[in-house]
Length: 374
Ligand code: GTQ
Ligand code: FE2
Image (tube, rainbow, N blue to C red):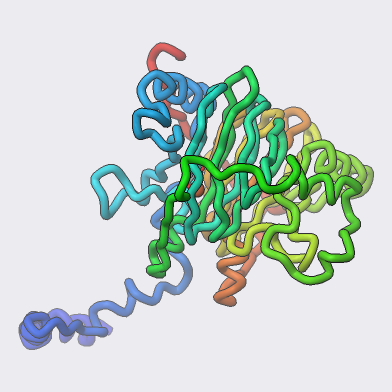
């Protein structure tokens, strides 16, 4: 072994490495340990953003960026501190595959219609009265609703209500960028006009788990919004029984016409962790972004404790050990790249075996909050 290492460091090898570099050639013998890890070594950090920070910055942005002044959408994205390469302002990656942001829209504002090859979803966290217009359907949004805009669909936002609204955006921006699939187009007019009844798709699915017979034929987005009342009802039914040891009571938003995830590339879940619930730890190749919709508790990610409460966002990078503890009844909305990992057939999961599935806590995460809110 020593002999082999000495040889690899020898002048002969070093000179050859340099020589071929001149011709834009590279030595696999140097690269292989970094290229082909024994297992994933995420660059993304486990991280948490407090609601007070997000809220404070959105309120500052409220004064500065308006759609009229070129703001288009008043969205602030969650920049993973481990993924800031490539561009001076960061890489807009919350995990290495997904982008998440908080978006604020005020009464009377219009976010122009456009379409792009990235798939998008929204989870409504604060307020009501605004709508997304997706392919001619105005979808009015209320807290806890989940909306989808799969790739290629026209969408814009407007606000006919009377209170500020904030929601979570998630798109597969880093993935589509990485594979060279980025296309973007503005709608010819400022905002698309309705061509369908308001809340058309949600009305077609008012009953929940039955589909209009026309939807036996797979469609891209037969249901545009998933109402909180229905999601909550599903979780209440589920939570009369035994929880999943890793995820508590969790449901996945699906496309009712094909049974797959509601967005083709992004999985979205809502989970309820009852007060006192302590999940077992596991890890998977998919990465996850959580939004704490209600309640409080903490998660242990690779041994570090992340305390969370309503409105916070946190990231579990790919292949990171994680477990959740609910201090009170908690509802966690989450998005993940499971469909991407499954598409490439690299989705794997592993249980944490030591200590009955619970990690030893070796540190505590301290979230950054602005001075004046401290
Ligand atoms: O609302 O259409 O946060 O296109 C990022 C890109 C939101 C949107 C984002 C987008 C949108
Ligand atoms: Fe968009």
